[in-house]
Length: 244
Image 1 (tube, rainbow, N blue to C red):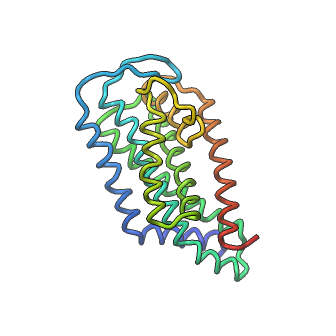
Image 2: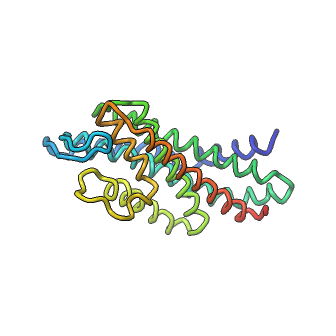
Image 3: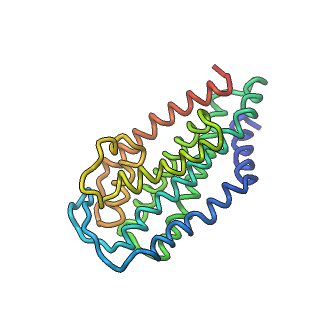
């Protein structure tokens, strides 16, 4: 059995044995999306959508479109934090006995991709019970990108901070980024908003949810951001398991 498969299966089992991660996956999207859909007043708001410009949207629809990627970000970020901290010691031992470092890193990346995909599917599934989007597959892709980007952020946080501090960062980080900095309700975009992980995938999400067209450039910028983040996380993880 290859190192890649062994490390990947270990990561999946670790995820399945972590009650916090399973609880987040099962209950957080339901709570976050449905509560916002329930408490929002039956009114409309004027918003700026990247591909179309100004338009009027029901508040309940707008908030669920916002909170769905946020739920995926929480699930992905928590997976990155918990799995990176629990896996570092085990992966370090694998490296010491001669396991290939690239395969170890790829296996952990595979687990994060799986966690982000699961969080995205669950979140979009919950959204579909209370609202509809114009371009479902594009919206799912945008949500997946948000979850994956915050999975990478969670992995970096897990390597740099202890678990308690990391949880606080991953509680407030996605909220400040996705719900505030990237919100189409704001009159002006904050100067730091384009630098945050959620900027381009949230533009893609708003286009896909609220209009019949999407701007593919937001997908390419999201993938470029993800590539840079993956390189940084991979380098940091290799250093953490001392395989340089």
